[in-house]
Length: 106
Image 1 (cartoon, helix red, strand yellow):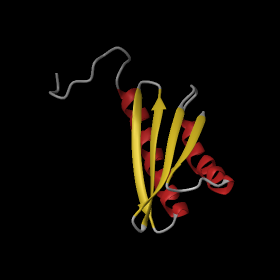
Image 2 (cartoon, one colour; image 1 turned 90 degrees about the vertical axis):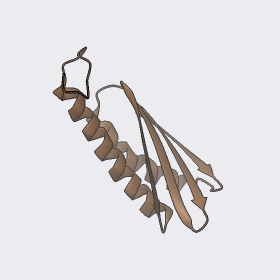
Image 3 (cartoon, helix red, strand yellow; image 1 turned 30 degrees about the horizontal axis):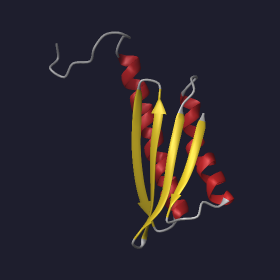
Image 4 (cartoon, helix red, strand yellow; image 1 turned 135 degrees about the vertical axis):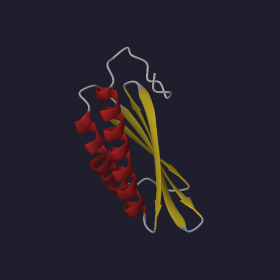
């Protein structure tokens, strides 16, 4: 798993980068294959905002979160991303490979 951390109007310190890798890195336990996650840290007015795009086999998942501090926003993002990945993985396991998923019940 590869995690890229970028800052938008925020300096990405080694401490922030390590924290992102620690928290977001737990998503990797759900996959045997390689995946890439791109995390952007930014300030929006008085709120710390974190945005992540996970390029996993078969799909790109996106999550974002905001908080009082950057660390709180990263925690929220990691939880959201983990839930998205688990949901995606369960959905893929329910359907046989090669069988299209249809919304009309057919």
